[in-house]
Image (cartoon, rainbow, N blue to C red):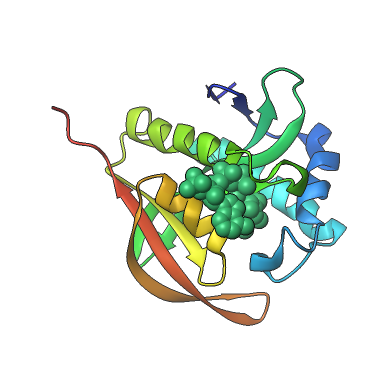
Length: 173
Ligand SMILES: CC(C)(COP(=O)(O)OP(=O)(O)OC[C@H]1O[C@@H](n2cnc3c(N)ncnc32)[C@H](O)[C@@H]1OP(=O)(O)O)[C@@H](O)C(=O)NCCC(=O)NCCS
């Protein structure tokens, strides 16, 4: 296990998580900000990319499971990204729609933010958010982030305006 929060545990994803992963990545509403649901090939590529990230970086988007049942309800974690001309660490979050609005994304993402500061020793954690994704902006705000800039992302053949949110490592008092 990578980290634990009051209600959740975060661990690496494996092929056993494919059904839970499909429930997230193949849901059109969940994937609105990614320009729609993924097909099976894209789901497999997503998991393979995360497994590569675990191997190469030691981190990636992890499975978020409920502490009691072990049910995988989302993905949250840290990835290397290039934002506003800088190589940075981003916290990302995507949850199964059946579990939205219970504070799970904010809780898991806060755990990842703190893990980045404590275990990876980074000075700043970022979140890149499509300008239409209000739910994601509210998670970023909840993490103590502010907007640092805006940029265009080109993904699946579409120009997507994005906001770059970030929070700085707290000063030690
Ligand atoms: C973004 C997402 C992860 C939020 O998950 P969640 O578990 O419902 O979020 P939380 O319950 O932790 O809510 C965190 C904050 O966001 C707010 N929020 C959540 N969903 C919202 C919505 N649809 N509209 C506006 N605000 C929303 C909550 O009110 C809360 O703010 P508060 O603490 O001030 O009340 C979820 O909507 C999702 O998986 N979306 C699809 C994937 C995605 O777009 N990921 C982000 C890519 S950048």
